Image 1: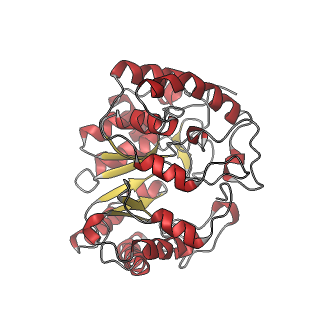
Image 2: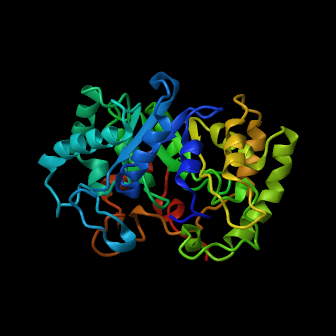
Length: 361
């Protein structure tokens, strides 16, 4: 996604090696069309398998699918590629090839990556996921909505439909983006689903080296954010900073601790970015900071609530997934709100027309 500067392979490999406070590594097969797997495989080579947790993700078909510009590769559930009866075969193939590139025999957790509506609801798909777990290719299963924010009701629906299969889910969540991820937490807890939170760094703002004068490179993925997001984020960070200083936490550690203070969040995954320019921190420094995150939670319930109020982002964007705002035919990442999902929303005290719509410019 062209965040910051390009990193030479040796430096990135060293960054990815488990240890020094970080013992979970995450990959997705579509990144680099398998190259992310291969690079991580080089990084974990020689490390005893019981010394780290390996998370993989499958979902985009770069084997038979054709890249569609900025949209990327189609999901393997795309009816142009295969029928439901063929889902299990694809899942088995994709998992085996990813593990082969990594040079290991199993994942500790396998995620369904960026599913479309079919991915959230297909019995055949989740039976295929269950099968690879029963075959010993993964220890646990989960779902990772994305890549943009939303999919709230779809994720809750998926967790309810396949509660016996799903162990984990990954969402976007941070003190600057509590909404809409917070709306799925109660349902996840009720079904004993653990949560991984990503983008915990809020595009680098919590690394404390993304400032209003930062010049992003052309095509940097963060350039798609609304104008003024860095300035607004930095203002909010200054209001949050005293909470971290009170407990001996850096801004990034404060964000991580805030995430982990929410049940059932059990893992945080900020993005480590080598920003451009001589004043930028090194990714090695950022990794050490993350690895030094105190294990004990230091924030009180009151502090968590106060920080959330500072970062309140309700209604700031148009969400993906099922939506009352969507008109027309379903898209791979957005579709109309069904009656079934409206009923689900009522049960979880979510009002889609109030809680899942854009309300600010």
